[in-house]
Amino acid sequence: MMEHSLFALVDLFGTFAFAVSGALAAEQKRLDLFGVVAISYMTACGGGIVRDLCLGSLPPVGISDWRYLATSALAAAMAIWARPIVDHLQHPVVFFDSLGLGFFAVVGAHKALLFGHNIEVAIVLGMVTAVGGGVARDVVLNRVPIILQKEIYALAALVGAALQVLGQFMEWRVAVTPWFAASICFAIRLLALRYSWSLPVFHKTDAAH
Amino acid sequence: MMEHSLFALVDLFGTFAFAVSGALAAEQKRLDLFGVVAISYMTACGGGIVRDLCLGSLPPVGISDWRYLATSALAAAMAIWARPIVDHLQHPVVFFDSLGLGFFAVVGAHKALLFGHNIEVAIVLGMVTAVGGGVARDVVLNRVPIILQKEIYALAALVGAALQVLGQFMEWRVAVTPWFAASICFAIRLLALRYSWSLPVFHKTDAAH
Amino acid sequence: MMEHSLFALVDLFGTFAFAVSGALAAEQKRLDLFGVVAISYMTACGGGIVRDLCLGSLPPVGISDWRYLATSALAAAMAIWARPIVDHLQHPVVFFDSLGLGFFAVVGAHKALLFGHNIEVAIVLGMVTAVGGGVARDVVLNRVPIILQKEIYALAALVGAALQVLGQFMEWRVAVTPWFAASICFAIRLLALRYSWSLPVFHKTDAAH
Picture 1 (tube, chains in turn green, yellow, purple):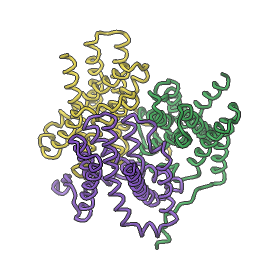
Picture 2: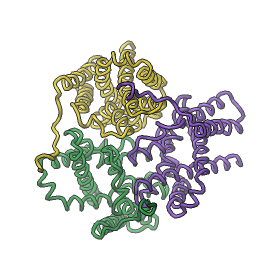
Picture 3: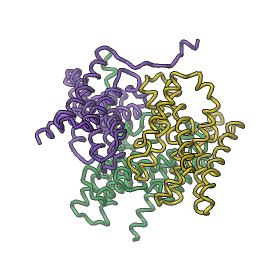
Picture 4: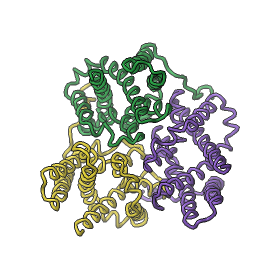
């Protein structure tokens, strides 16, 4: 019970962090108040909605549980009217975003296994839960998704989801697995940011000259 | 019975108006004949398809009921071969688009409640039904969704969906509620166009200099 | 049995060809390794995933059957590390892409009928299966979908899906129908490429001056 509450709390922290990143991006594109809230919500809940559509868990929890919408709206409101606080939270935002990445990956993988699906479904949907919202944000704002270009991001989510799946199959202790899997994802992401770890890019524009 | 027919008729008017707006946008981007029909259909039915996916009402009615596809194709054909008529209908198109916005919001909210879901699901999916197609159109045509930037649009749909939900919970007369909710949405949208009501934009590019 | 194996094999050839086209496009946009694999997978499986969401066949086979992901990853790896082979396969890629178009259209239409849906659902979802991945690729890479602009492509898929539906309703021989329908689609596409058949475009930029 206590564990479940903690899980839900961190889930909402992740939602908040993703929502803030969506709101800031929407403001930059000069969207209006409604647009900022909409992009904020889409960034925070888009991945989970696609996961639930693929699992047939309908309606998606991001729509049916009011706390996700409320958290997104709160994050958007803060990005608009309490910008100094958000700027002050800049590091916390990166922190929560990375934390959210880990927990969303774990939650997504766990939910897929709970619905009785195989390992691949769990890993793919864990990753989709974690990165889907950011991709939706960038697609709607007409940008090439940043997470497919920059420091290791989706790969960290992949590792988190895979560890959760491994843990459940190896029957690691239930109370430990999600925390461990999310922590590794979180650590990879923070280290990637700290040391600018990037995956290779292969386009040979220069070599072609 | 009669009421249901009227409802279906106005639903198709809305479909037609959204389809015309999609076709005109696709022509501007120089898509070919097929592209124009595809964007037209996507604009008219995209919102309802996402709603039905979220409700698990499969296959989505926009795909299984031929009248939606036929209406979209007719609208695209008119936008191509009867452009003078469409230009003549310019004001009617804005009229039907606003009407469609209201009715799609009401239809979406009503269907979500019919499937036994809660208030939030009904309001969110009512809005998604009304604005989803326009967002899909702009995303595929590689533009930042116009409805997130300009005169009050999605907010009008939100009000329409919310009034429908309120009406059903307050047990207003069944024959009156949808017309009332759609009318208010319609009125807000027309007034916003007439008086250029916009929601605030928060990006402080100039202030930053 | 043998026929089913052949079908599955050609399905995977189509997946491979679509995945290669996705990987090449992602490299051009300078995505990183993960981005290339992600776009590759999305191009190959996006259409089938949307079809399965609309049919309620969950989780989508593109996610639950590991061979689709493995084929996509293989194609991406070849586009990155065995570029000379891929360039050598250039004509085969166009060949497989056209073949894949035909078979995806047939598979999609067949699956929709199998789930008990009507003609329109079968034709629309056959086409969505065939072209959905390419549209997803272009949307995520921030381009107007090429298949809505250039040589006859989606129309060929439409014809393939329609012939499969016709064949099933006319009770043509089960062993012949899919091959026939896919072949016609394939032939239309190759002829369109060979002779630059395009659908008309209607935007009158010049005429307006």
